Amino acid sequence: MDNKTKEFYEAHKDKDFTYPSLPSTVNEKEGVAVCKFVLQQMLDNNIGWLELDVASVNNREYEDIGVTFKTRLEIDRLVPHMKKLPLGIDGITLYNSKWLYIDGADVTELSNWWWQNMAGDKLTKLNVWRMKPNEYVAPHNINIKELTDNIDNLDMIDYPFPIVVNMVEPGLDCHTVVEGMGIVPNQLGRIFLINPNLERCMVNNGKTDSIRMHGYIRPGMEFQRWCDLITRSYMRQLSIQNA
Image: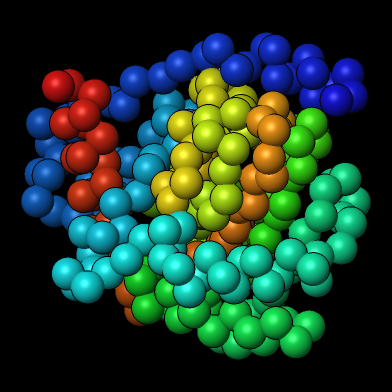
């Protein structure tokens, strides 16, 4: 990897953070209040990422995208259509509508999963990135829309929040390192909301490819469901942390 990435990786990979407890003024049953608290903690750089419990806002037939056979087949179909990106890795980008085909590859199941399950009414952009062994992505922070430093000044309904979905992973050996926060515990099928305020780099130390989807979700008409997703995910992380 280049010197900039190596320095960033070494400086931040061993960092850590603790999920702050809810203050007494925030009722854990009020989704909007909890969501605002969590997102403010991200804006204040106290939280690096939040694993999303997407099943908690879907029906009992829900299946995680990373372990669903049809979606994994569609990822395989996308790989031959990927092109070398300026980032130095292979990838493909989809924009601004309910995409069913890309360069002749059927991605109906992937598209339907995002639109039906992800607690948002608009998928603004979707990057599918493939990192081969020993490849990396230099420190970056790609936001579609400018952030504010106060959640009350941020249009939570319209802001495109960055989501990472792990579709193919070499165990735990492909690292996403978030500035000041350490290594995201990426693993097959896991889904994360990443702090949109901080830089991150990616380094594949594994022996096989890593393929991840990087989506930008606007809650829109699904705002309450989005708040419920953040709330249930956060309360789950607090339970795990305090066990």
